[in-house]
Length: 203
Image (cartoon, rainbow, N blue to C red):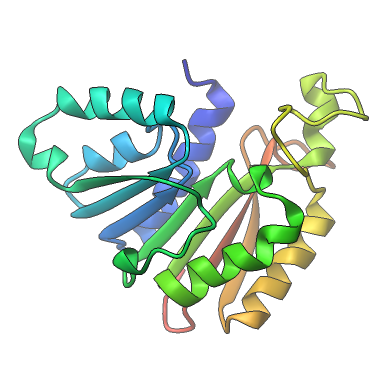
């Protein structure tokens, strides 16, 4: 079952997609479809793709899609594989989203991820959410641990902002960083969101 904080994350991403009038979206690390299923049920999104390494998660997502209307299912393509692999078949989608997944990538592979997303898929919009390490004490996470054993990093807000600024500069994008999910004064939200967008896109 999704937590209240995760619902806030998903809503924050949905709000950006609607604000920018995105019609086609690729969800990298889509898991069992927490976001993708919401997008599929909204007729505003006409082309959707989900990429996921976990066969189990994809199986659960396929089962959830199977009970939906055929018109909904036909708008969704599922791909088993890594977020790091180039996906020329997705070139030109309006938006790429990653909800709490980039922190699963090895830090030394982030440049490879940048090329796969910004150079190969080259969407007008990229939306990323990732844990905010400053919030961890509020969740009872010890200082020497990450929220999940499969995370390879969890950045504080300054580190995330510096990374986002670098990504935007390397790929000629405008950018914004926002605190989301249970925002508290002084520590931000449970997650932080980076939005990268083409210079001619209004946000």
